[in-house]
Amino acid sequence: MRTLLGIYALGQMSPDEIAAVEAHLARCRPCLAECEELGLTALCLGALSDVDLTAAVVEAGRCMITIRLLTSGTGARTRPRPAPPGAAAGQ
Image (cartoon, rainbow, N blue to C red; front, side, top):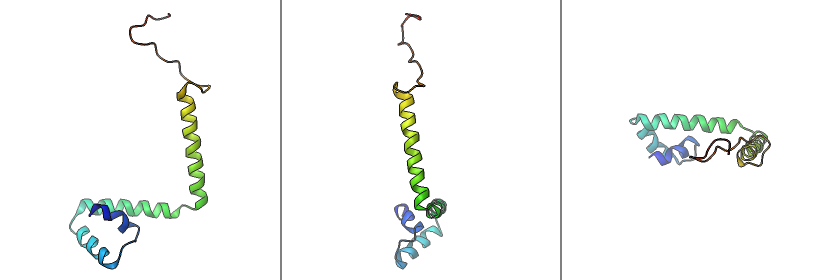
């Protein structure tokens, strides 16, 4: 039943499927709670415009590139790597 909750939250079910899911939700609190969360997520995603989504993807890409640069040793703000275990300090 849990695999059907996302489809239900998006309103993409036949009337018979909806009736079956709602009958289950009436007696299963964990599925009901998950369905409420999925419904809220679907509502939030529906509120995004194509422009908002594109900007979010572009910004996420910039963040990932920045993180890679800062942690790869090629970026300007990298941290010095720690000495291997057992190495004497200052060598």
